[in-house]
Image (cartoon, rainbow, N blue to C red; front, side):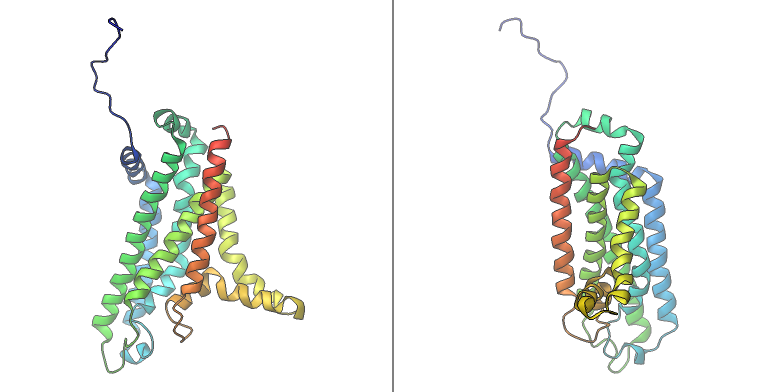
Length: 262
């Protein structure tokens, strides 16, 4: 058409990179991110260095140098779970999700960007803190037979495990759209499998279930990753199970995202 309007403002087609930039800006500018990550670092590094200062090289014979990070990571995982929930549910709670979806109508792109940005931050922070504790432990406790178990895999798998827990929490937050409810649900996922086996193993009919639940709960899974079981599995099966559960939750979050109103 001869009289067709042409905007003087350059119009560019949006893509995932724009959504990633937006989510990065949001997640780094809210106080909850700094507080939860700060507490996470204080727990993992603080408790880890405290353990390093109270151990000697004999304590690391048959164990990786990253072992002190395990104790802080048990508590620190709650911080990443909380942050994962808040990344999505806080926007629903304040109503800002309407603005987000107005600016980016492709809802799947927004959720994908949230997951990617959160996972990268969680993995860098968690793996980095475990690595720092491992380096400090190696420097302070080197000796005959100490640290003969490779500790590089514990850095990667430990960081990956708690980061996947955070992504699972993010997916649950997206599905429930309620911060308190999603955090409570995730605390149940972490704590109940660690408590129930005590009762399930009382009866013969549920003994096997109790054993499996004890083997795959979040706390014991981290123990396997840090080789506290003394075997060579390294928590691989626990990591695979969590990856499958997280993938199922991610699929559920994407499916519900398109079916429900804001």
